[in-house]
Amino acid sequence: MTQRRIEVVSTAEPPTCPRCEGEALLSARVPYGWANAGGGWVHGRTGVVLCPACDEDAPHAAPLITWFHVHGKADHGDAELARLLAAWAQNVSVSRLDEQALEAEIGRWRRGDL
Image 1 (cartoon, rainbow, N blue to C red):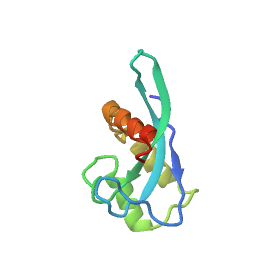
Image 2: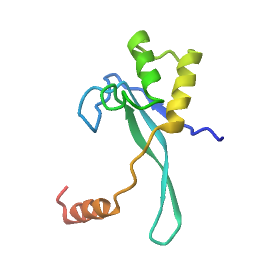
Image 3: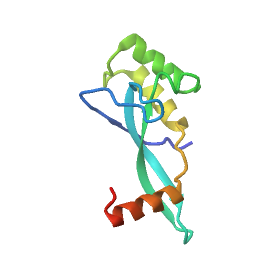
Image 4: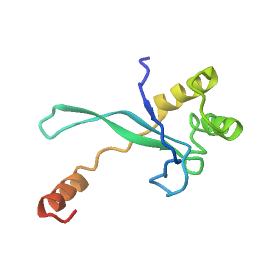
């Protein structure tokens, strides 16, 4: 299986979870894509967060959440953290693009409403 490459985003303040608006443990960018109306594949990256409240029941997130509760801060040389991050990254779910919402936002932007 090919590993999903993620980019962990380092910030001074903890990220905010977009689902519950609570404090998340980490923010990352993961590969993301979709087929456009013409059938072509659109490649990109999207942001995801690891939230102790929203992700506590996710099988690959729970061990990583526990690691953060025990260790606090990430250490780039920690092999266990790297293994847990890789497992989470392989299984983190990204919501499908809502093309209607995107088109509506583009319309608002064009009208100057944003």
